[in-house]
Image 1: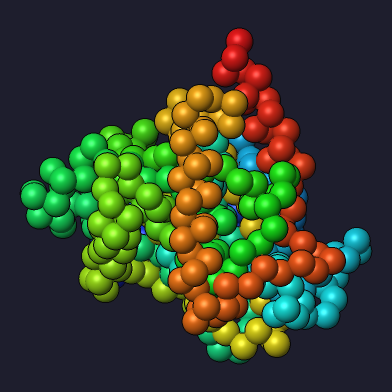
Image 2 (image 1 turned 45 degrees about the vertical axis):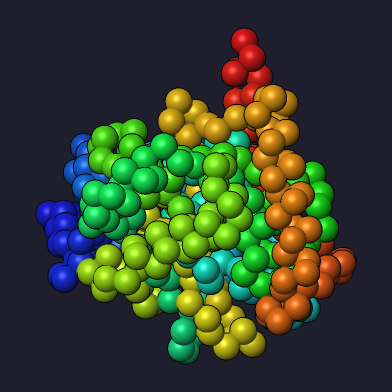
Length: 346
């Protein structure tokens, strides 16, 4: 194996390309500079890896306990033999949720414990479009004027996928336990101190709404302005044009990301692995906590308001009920959150 080459991405405040290694053959000694680069740069690109499902799981597990491993992030159903079937139609909740992911967000802020990092590996990519974009919330926070930093220092927002689907797309999935549309909303600060680097960054995105202490309009304007500010500078945004075999891993505690649109009749198959956050830094609270009721009420009120405001959005404020239903929660995520909840009450 040749020497590891870690090359910062030119013209950007973040990101690096890693070459000279095979992830599937990475020793513990070789992982140390990879982990250090991940924390320094926020995301890493590994071209030409062609990882198997097991190799995705093993590499993701080096960063921490997994929420899920090697899950298809695809517009096709995966068969038991590993092959993929016909393209899933846009009339399904599965694809509505995929389209929702084309707005800036960070993963799992809608669960009690938000994500540490996420990884995608490309299997099949469309001829055009379907890129993944990342945005640097560390550099975004640092570039804010002092008055804005002071204004948001002690503010927080609720996070919910039911809100984001309704707000962005006029899509109101049926609420169902065991899916990402579970009826809870979790309060998280707008300014996050990274638990490993101690660097401050914004912690916002499409799932955030309802800043306590602000009017609904003030909250909407503030949250939209913060995301817009982060992505306004090209140096703070990176676009990854996928090639089969690429692997991309990013820090959910410091970066935003989104998928770019493409011709949805063409296959787009990525393998997704997500690392759970450490409860000490990423736990908001659990549903049985007294604070959870305020989140549920805030979400209810917001959804009621959005039902009257979303008729002109992508899905026209309709509720979809099809055989696929809402995206189910991976059993590993269920077990993880149940285990953490038990530990928190000991």
